[in-house]
Length: 359
Image (cartoon, rainbow, N blue to C red; front, side, top):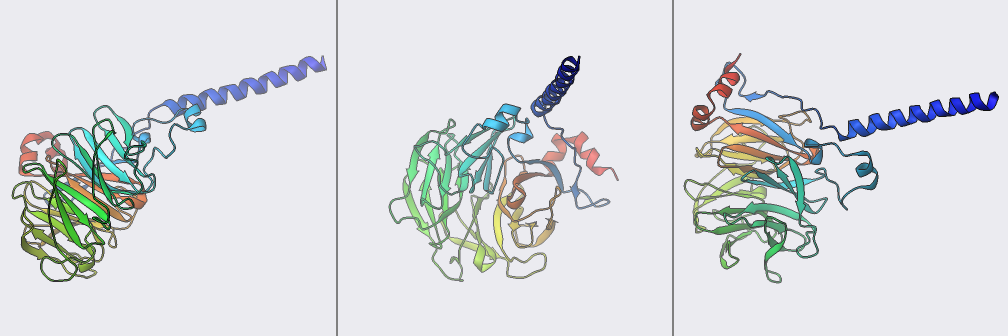
């Protein structure tokens, strides 16, 4: 009788453990709940100009790992962003370099999945920084440690490698003018810009160390104005943005060192929208500043924090053809996406715009 009772007690415990295990397994496989966030800038009653869209962290944005995936793991690196730096978008995909995991995260927003590139033996990355995509689908990634720029196809296969020995000292931000097939590569430690064709042919360089017009002091990132072809470069340690034409001829500059909005302390990422507004992330202010084409401050977003719309060491910035603004929020291990509410966007999204007008 005692043995039967003891066996019954043990069976009850076993069933309880199995029940808890099944609950854990089911909850692990369920997609994560998405919390809707509504943020607009400036605040009502001002007319909205920028709206928060979403934040992306990794595989957990689309699914939760199952029990055995959690135990055994799938890759030699984390499938969640650890220390992202560069970002770009092309079609339905978003590409993010991660300097800690040494890979490029590929977020397929249509298929709702994350894949990776730069981890294969051919073209294996060490310290990926900048990322840009050419119109023929080659994903270019700069590697600051290997001092090369690699080009991959959509499947992550290495197709091209740029940079002879000692050519680059520290390749960082990169941008592509697809209209003329040019790749602009920032060499931070070389205080210059290398220009290649997207086929891999070296064309020319411009810049040297200094604080005069057309000179640099540890530049970091670059963006192309799609309307003019002008090249905008964050001249980080000169605390300014410099603008050049497509051939590297100096056009203008704006910005100065300071601790108030409209000035810079540690400018990093840069992007240009369809109406010529300039978005600059400052890693010291933990914010995103928006300027007009004359360099006058229009609006700033964020400040130190972890909630949506706040940043912790922001880095790369990219603005796509639909005026979505992608900001790498490095120490928050995410990329935040905002929408510039252009006149074109208002006409294409009248109902959504009405929601933003609600007081």
